Structures are given as structure tokens and as C-alpha cells.
Length: 204
Image (cartoon, rainbow, N blue to C red; front, side, top):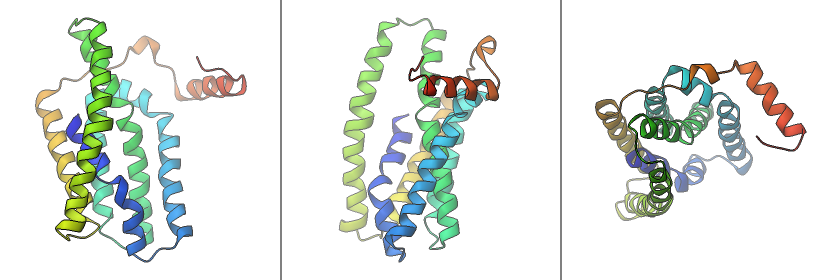
């Protein structure tokens, strides 16, 4: 999981820089970013349900594949290709912040581990994933771009390599798990529930 997270952190600092080196202005870059955030928001409403039905391990593999494809698009200076990459990146982000945690919780429960261990695991994940790995990824990206002068696409190529390694680990060592079929609701029902929660000012 941490290898896949490193693939995400490597890209962040260089997205804007890469677009600017391709000659895009603030307006076009803003549109690309909005497309990514919008894609993540839209797909985020259904990704949990899809992962529950199709399998969380499969969703984690899909994250790796989708983000690798997003990284590949960064080699093109074409606006349309970069836009596709941003949409793919938004989908991948939704998967990153849902499928991995769902798989972990389900696997933890399936193996009958102590419930209190989960809080320990997540606290360590915050420190390692959002702290240490983020810092190390930033330093590594800086090494590739500035020290080794490999260009602004280098962090994305490195991210794709980390994501491929992460996918290999998932495929070789993770078991599949699914959501409780009795709790699955159709998509329309989920959207209605979300709309009611938003308009009533409460989140269940």
C-alpha cells in the first residue's frame, strides 16, 4: 500500500510545473485541475459501492492501472491528452482514498484480529503515508528534476514504476474481499440518501 501511496505523492509538486513548461496559461491549467477534482468528486460517489460489489483488491489494482495511464499522458503536450490524464487521475484518487482502507478493514475482520489494532494501523499509516513517505517522495522528485536534470516528466515516470511495483505486490499477496451484499443499495438510492443528508445539514 505504501508503495502505491508513494506513486501518488511523487506527482503532486510537479503537475502545475509540467503544464507550465508545455506552455499552458493559468486559465488552461485551472481547467485541467478542475477536471481532475470534478472527476474525483463524481466518481467518488460510486467508487465505494463498485469496490464492494466487484472486489476491493480489484479496485486497488484498478487504482494502480488508472494512475499509471494518467502518468503516461504527461508525456504529451496535447491539451486533450492531458485532460484525459486529469480525469484518470481523479478516478484514481477516489480509489486511493476508499478501496485500500475498505480492503484493510475487511481483511482485518476476516482474520479475526483485535479491533483496537485497527486504530494503531491507521495512526501509523497517517505518519508513514501522509508524513514520511510524502517527504521522501518530495525529496526523490526534487532529485530527479533538479539534481539529475531529468526533466519535469521524470517524477511521473518514477510514480508509474512505484505503482507497477505496488500492483505486483497486491496481485501476488492480497486476497479478495467484498462488501456485505445485504447492505448494498442501488446507485439511485445512494444518491437520494446523499441528497437528503446534504439538504438536511446532517451526515449519517
